[in-house]
Image (cartoon, rainbow, N blue to C red; front, side, top):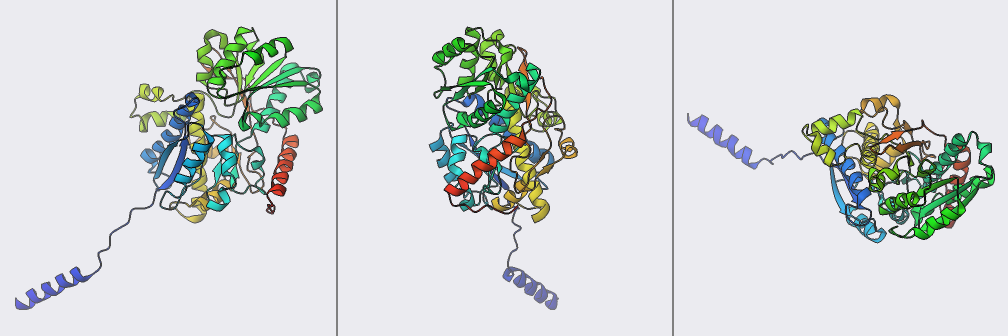
Amino acid sequence: MKFKRTLLAAVGAAVLAAPVLVSKAQADQFFPLLVYRTGPYAVGGIPLANGFTDYFKLLNARDGGVNGVKLSYEECETKYNTKIGVECYEKMKNKGEVGPSLINPYSTGITYQLIPKAPVDKVPIHSMGYGRTAAGDGRVFPWAFTFPTSYWSQAAAFINYVGELEGGMDKLKGKKLVLVYHNSAYGKEPIPTFNLLAKKYGYEIKMLAVDHPGQEQKAAWLQIRRYRPDYVFLTGWGVMNQVAIKEAAAINFPMDHFIGNWWSAGETDVRPAGKAAIGYKAATFNQPGAKAGVHADIIKHVYGGDAAAAKKAQIGEVLYNRGVMNAIYNTESVRTAMGKYGNKAMSGEQVRWGMENLDLTQARLNELGVGKFMAPTKVSCADHEGGGKVMFQQWTGTEWKLISGWIGTMQDVIRPMTEAAAAAYAKENKITLRSC
């Protein structure tokens, strides 16, 4: 008995003396989110942010994250202001246990400011269908990505689409086009493409700038009424789009010849004009409506089956869907990186590799419940744009309907433009091109 007491005492002392091993929870995959839920462009920023965060919530609730790694995020309000956006980036770039996964600036102005910072901070930039188009050349911009397409590709698709409507590209000669654009780096992006293609196809084009935030447009539309163009292309954002559609209706411009870019393509852009907006068209690279399997999963796992609550968050609207699509690209880039580096939280440098090796096949899109929702996308060392696919949709008065398949984006013209612009940037900034 005395021996047993001595043994127990010795074991107890050993346990107290031994180091206590506490299991550390696995690090989350952290996403800093630059959002603008307030300010003059909030009508577009709110559904974008909702779609983005709802997809993260879906993966956490349904799948436990990505390959068992939970996703976390923090929003920083930019009000779509470049200065505030850069401040948000500086505040967020060192957060997360292994740092940020990547950054989605959601502003061309902010993107321009962050591109030089990315290779220094090792935080990749994904400007999905916006930003500096030249960043599609990964040899010069290894840390910036524009997939699935760019403003230059979109402008080329618009010209291709007009050519189809007119019965052939040769019918563009002598046609009169107008670009109504937001007077900012964003709005000016497609100008080089329109000018180059005007020389190729012989159309005339007039450029009309609209100053921030875009409520004063009467002078521009009076010029349009005098000029009598065949087609008008709108590169607007926020309230500018609503005003443009109302002004077009006021001069009786035919809505089916008025075509917006993919940031002038939301429900909030057309609803304020009522019946006058019927027939208005716009570019897109994602399917409208809440028809995909991913929407059903979001309603089930994020909103507990409450479809009304999901609708209040604007599920299925064009910009909500775009937020979902952006989150899919980001999380699938992380998943791709995990295929090389293991199932743990990926650093920005590892995510950059995942983005550059992303290959979203049709089979994978089907698995994600987005088989018809978006196009397959393949990124490479040299090609950070990923192919540049564009569709067109039309407003019926109650919903958007797709009216085209994937329209060609003249990559034989656009890619050389991209490479030339990237080479000029490299020369100016003393950057040596990577060998891909």
